[in-house]
Amino acid sequence: MLKVSFTGHRKIKENSKLMTELTKTLKNLITSGAVDFYAGGALGWDIYCENAVLSLKEKYPQIKLHLVLPCSAKEQTAKWNKKQKEQYNT
Image (cartoon, rainbow, N blue to C red; front, top):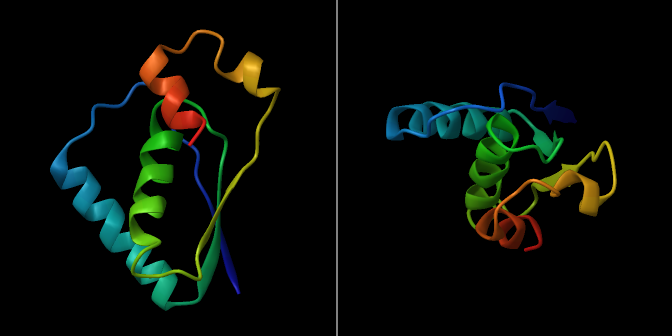
């Protein structure tokens, strides 16, 4: 069983071409046996990938997203805006 983790830059501009490629890559991983996906919950690439995994859960209900947090939720989100905190808490 494959396990996948994400790491990347905190400053990333979302765009449809990047999301399309990421989704394509994730689908290939899932069809190859990936079930567990791990991310650090940081703004930027982590959340970008987390959202992509969550969007695929409807089609692939067997996949799981795991957050590997480096600190408490309060510390993790201390400098985040209200929208970012709401998304984090869902």
